[in-house]
Image 1 (spheres, rainbow, N blue to C red):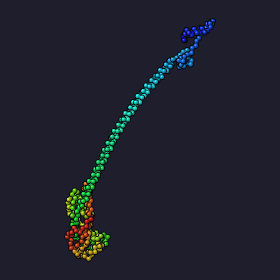
Image 2: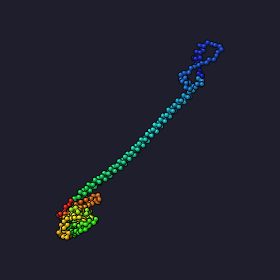
Image 3: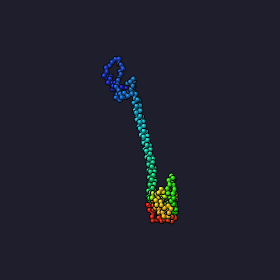
Image 4: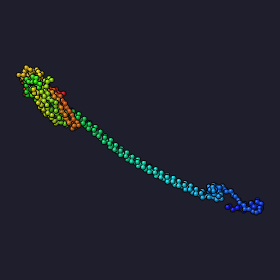
Length: 306
């Protein structure tokens, strides 16, 4: 397997004595360290020590190199994909932030408009309330002027009779008219006028009553209202003692009466939203005299207004 050098042959020939017959010599040379490593890597358990296989080491190096190159390429590809994925995530996050910013701007603008509308509505309500209060206060200063001018007793009669239960008693009949002057001093609204029943009392005994018709009084105007107050077959039960002995001489009779009623005035300044209301209670003492029938009795200075 290995060629022998001349020095080796000479040393062997000189040292070995001549022998006969001469036999062939075999030389065993131990492998070097490099060859031992090759043998440890390349020889199989059943292989001959004289045959060295170097191809597995070469292939192993190539495969490790290729694997390292592939791992480097794969790591490069992986890092590239990671970078692309990270860029996509950043772009998606930026787009989402932009969308969120747009949504926030939209909602902020909508909230701003809602607040503006609410502020405008609140300001309108406040201004309208203030304006209505001003109108209401101004309207309250225009109180209607009511004067009971006179009363006329047309007829007065007392006669014997029976009440609804058949009890005999004196029965009174009365016919009268009342004239009232009504004036509306308001400059910017009219009023609707009504009243409670107009009643005549002899102390606590009601002897006659009447009702005024409702009317409308325009601004800065006045009118004269006439009401009829009647009493028909009113049982006295001895209540009117002043006429007890004067049934046949009524011209000498003097019966104290009280005229009472309440006047209601409603003014609509701004439709039904702003309105004013005036109440005036009136009580007028009057004396019915038999010798003054069909003549007006002045009540201008005798009535009490509340």
